[in-house]
Figure 1 (cartoon, rainbow, N blue to C red):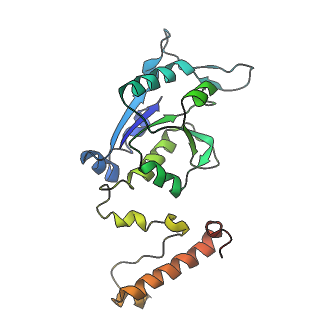
Figure 2: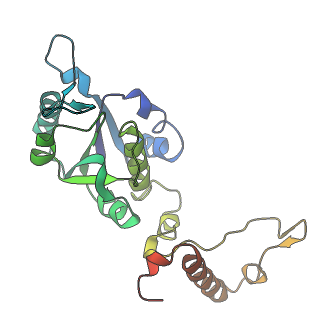
Length: 227
């Protein structure tokens, strides 16, 4: 998968993509991430990328021209499956959306700033708008990092054990069950006997029961009207 990220602050995204799972994915050639500074495409003398909004009001707006020029250049080089705008008023990111996007080949992610981007960019270029929650960040970079991490780990070959992602929380609309590791007892706190039994059928049943119990207690909304 190739991901092109359009941003005013590329330095904010260098660290999240330079360690751990995403760095390994890049090293393997599975994930190809490119950061593009929108300011490089400003055509005015002072390289301004924002301006006052028509109609008055507080806050600046990201200008249409540099973003359009950058997207046009990228689209002239390859086909893109999605052009995603990270915005508080987009659809709220969930595991199902991550699953969908992880199957794409090439995507562009646009990071907003100020009061957002000129609406003409949204009307003529953006194919999907995504929010990571009902709150406002200073810019879309951190949200873009969350999206890339969430979809990147789903791409085959990124995780050492590909089945790990299939048992994460929110797959099948359930939270993950409790997990334990050695030692089997610490300060009198014991690992459930079933996990030490070696009976994988019983273990799987226990995990299903615990996942359902935890989801009922913490996120009953995931179960809809089924429970």
